[in-house]
Amino acid sequence: LNKPDYIRKDVNYEGCTDSFEDATTVLIGAGYDGTSTYRSGSRYAPRAIRKNTILSQEDYSPYLKKDLKDQAIHDFGNIQIPHGNREEVLKRIEQVSEYVVRHNKKPFFIGGEHLITLPAIKPLIQKYPDLHVIQLDAHLDLMDVLFGERFSHGTVMRRIYELLEEPKRIFQVGIRSGNQEEFIFSESNTKVFLFNTESFIPQIKLLEGKTVYLTVDLDVFDPSLIPGTGTPEAGGIFFPEFINLLKHIKHLNIVGADLVELSPPIDPTNISTIIASQILRELLLIL
Ligand SMILES: [Mn+2]
Image (cartoon, rainbow, N blue to C red; front, side, top):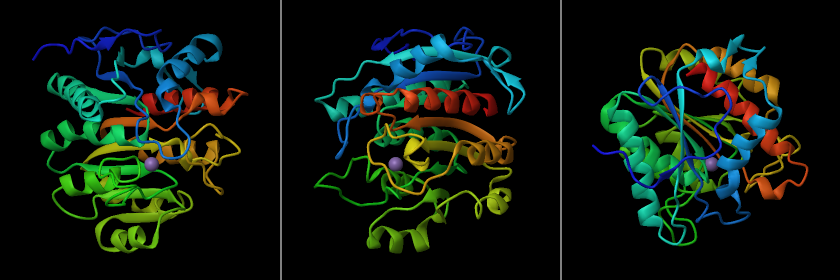
């Protein structure tokens, strides 16, 4: 299996300095925003997040009392995205994920929009038949079709559900938006924890002993904290609640993850990007 030739080195995420060979986690930018139906711009997130870590971010987390330098993380760079060719984009992301997984490393994707989770997770579903998913998100993303498209940021969890062998393997946390059909579908097919992390925390024990994929859609956070996202929804979580959740899931066997839906150009203050890169630091520290 050759290294895909469409990966380009970007500025390095500070603290992620290990070689590919030495790393246990591999960071990959997948800046695709081709199906964003409301506000696009997440294609710019991988570079914006990395740049911020150089200018303003410490490698050490006082929350988790860990330092990125002590983690074995390689920053692979970005997948070159042919925006007009969705099929090719999805193929590339899946191939890169497969490359990382075949080398027994954990892929961590920076989106891009939420559709990137589908190709990112596929090789992990193949490798781990017991794979479960934690989705932090304002939206269910369980539509079968959105604006005529089966492959979209609004259908991504439905497509992932179809790849998992049995229902109730997707834990959807912080949900506060979806249409009636999606909520009816979720009743028998996923586990939904509305509005915040409170009702989820007692259920984390169900994930012990399983392999877990963690997908974080930044719109789970309150839009006053992260206005720079494609589809903001009122009433989201704040940073301390997120840290508390990480402390409750950090012992799980998380084998892959992503952080999606940051759109830097929407927020002229740049605060959304700064907070997203700090969120990413904390996520990298629990892998
Ligand atoms: Mn989403």
